[in-house]
Every structure is written in C-alpha cells, then in structure tokens.
Length: 174
Length: 181
Image (cartoon, rainbow over all chains, first blue to last red; front, top):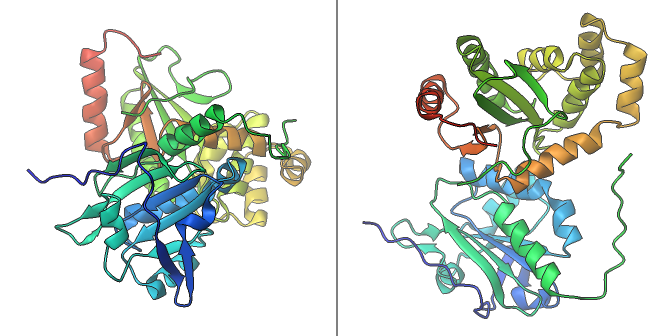
C-alpha cells in the first residue's frame, strides 16, 4: 500500500517560509499575520486537474476578499513556469515556487509525494495568528473543490468576535 | 462524499417526468467543452429513461477561463424568463462556443422570443444574481469543476459518459427504495 502524505493537523503552528513568486520577488507566510491564509499545495503547473482546481479558486476571489483571506498556491515548479501558467489561466493569486531545496516547504507541511517528487494536493487554512485551523489532503487525481476551505473560513469568522471590517455588501439582490 | 446542499425546488430548471425516481442535477458552463460533450450524453439518457429521470441544470460559469460563459448563462436565463430555458440551453450547447452578441440575438430571434426584453435583461444583468446563487450553492456542495453531476443529491464522481452513467442510474433504479431528499 502506498502511504498517503499526512498533512500537519489543526492546532499546529504553521511553519513559516519565504518562497519566490517571481524570479525577483519573495513572499513570506509571516507577512500575512493578522489575516487568514489559504495555502494550496498542488502537484504541477499545467496538469488538468490542478488547472480546474485553481480555476475554481480564481473564480472565488469575492469569497476570499469577504473573509479577508490571502490565497497562496505552492508547487515545486520553477518561477518561469509559474509565470507562464498564471498568465495563461489568468490567475490572480501568487503561485509560489518550492523549487530549491525542492519540496522543502511541502515536506515541512506533510504535503509532499515522495515517490513522485511533487507536492501533494493538500489544503491548509491558517488562522490570523498563524495556527493551522484546518487541513486536508486528497489523492492526486481528485479535485478537492472549495467547500472544505469555505467551511473552515466560516468557522474562523464565527469563532472570532472581531470588529467587523467595513465590508460593503455590494451584492445586488434585486 | 459530497451532497447537494440546496435541494431541487421550483427555482430550478427541470425537465423530464416530474415524478421520476431519479433526479440528476448538472452544474454546467455553456462554454465548457466537456459540458458540451455531456450535453449529448444526457440527451440520450433523458430519452432512454423518459419515465425515470428528471434533469435540472444549474449554472457554474468559470468566467476567468471562459469569458463568454456568463453572457451565455444570462442568455439561457433570459430565455427562461420567457418560458424557453431548455430550448435555449440546447441551442447554446449545440452552437458552442459561438456566443458573440449578434449570434445570441439570432438564437433569441430563432426561438421567437422578445428581443427587446432580451436586450434589457442582458444590459441590466437581471439574471446575474441567480447565476451567482447557483454557483455558490454549487461550491458549497463540493462542485469542483464542470460538469459536476449529482444523482439524487449525491455527487457522481464517475466519468460523465454514457456507460458509467447508465450503470449508476440502473443501480439507483434497482436499489432505490426511496428517493433522497
């Protein structure tokens, strides 16, 4: 039996990292403290399921904004591949490159497929204090959708009686 | 296993026998080529299971990769407001992906719909809230791409092809002692 990667569970401090999003730009997880972060590990740019999965998250920008959440997607692809892929799919969130040392961040999150040498298809919702609130890993060929992420973000909002940000309810309910 | 969180009700576009024991809900995108393929498969199944199957269509336009998906969905809804949702649904899938505005107007005229009313519905984005509701209801039910099908409220994770779908339907028909809510 192949052993599935075991993602870091809820309650664990999310390991900090700093990865390249472009050849000359780096993004650190710690820079998003104070906001929820949705961390999406995926096996590869260009593979069909990832495309669908990221296309869905791209479509949900309004939801991420509503939760003040930052979405970060991570694979072991290099930044040039990320740039071309993001451009082709019109993605509007950063793709981070876990390229050198390869897969190091994915390994720290328990989200690395050792046999294949790629990131697993794993999702993490990290709370504003930098603690993992929810995580899951799905088989490589299965698109996990977004329902689990949205439920976790809802739960974070519900558990945090914070001063409401001036979120204009711009929905036109006629 | 993912479940349909919003049950089929009168807001849904439904076709087939209303008392059918099996309800198939498709979350689809008119510009998605896979949905175009599934359209033909479902048509066949609807004919084969005329008494046992009813089909609902909900919108799941992936607008970032399919820039014409939203206006196509709006066109279907605008036709629906004039009583011809399914006729337009079929026209759109059969003419995929030719959704330039003049084409859409031609489809509206071919179906003998009120063109002024159509222009007005599109210009005011009258049906966008319903389309977005379909989309978010889908996301919450675990829809992860298009097409995603639900059979009696449970997500169908097989291929959207004839043989596996027939198999799934036959299984439900033989084992179906009750219809899922």
